[in-house]
Length: 345
Image 1 (cartoon, rainbow, N blue to C red):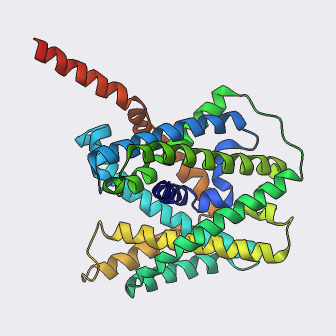
Image 2: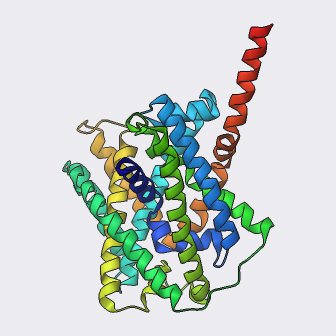
Image 3: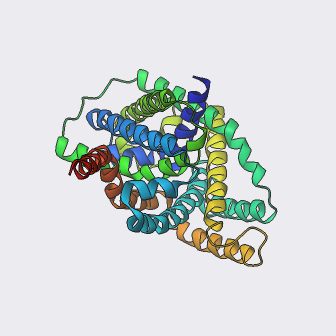
């Protein structure tokens, strides 16, 4: 159980980024009151997580490339390898925009917030201070617990919305939302495949992670239902919810959210730079500065707009990966039957 808790923390921490914690990602895909769609997501996420963990355990993986090749084949895996680089670039850009949105919500300049994070990324990576990332181990559990508490208090003090039953709309968005999270989920699970010791851990981790995420999304979705008419007041909807709490709660949650954004951006940039050059190489710092400047420029599009267009785009791109993951057991059985027939013949 102790080991399973470690994997659950890893998966939840990967899933709850700036888009999720801010509420903007939940609003983008569920629009408040979409309970049926969220229940469907829990089922899809459980299957995705279970199959990724089971494959990682069976193959004792240490890198996502192994899983990609197994699920989609060598040729398609090469395409997704490039897509992961684009994903990392766009994710860091969203984080920089998220920093600006936090500053803006606290009455400061959006541009200042984006610039501060851009400078921190350069300083930390230039000075090889990547141990700064270890604070994420402390920040994320507190952020998730605090967010869950705030949402629960907010929701319990308001009437519950009617359940939306619109399969043609809900189902499509749910598939895209699940697909959006497949790449980061695969990337993190594949790195610990050789550390998973028992098959029991796979089922337990997948089930509990799915239920925790589903509960968080339902809480957030119900809360967003009540503030839907004021969604454009802040780039991060969570601040509409925080208006119901004392100022110190707002400052505390803003600090946690901003620090989580900072560590996520630094971790993403570390992974992205590793694909271009080695740390300490003469081109490393040139790549670092050029990429951060480009990201800073693109972040001026705004956090809301980036989440609105980038996240659905990746949901569409990853839908093939989700499809292959869902049918993987069928493909595996079909191959086994073919081999049996060949042997019999």
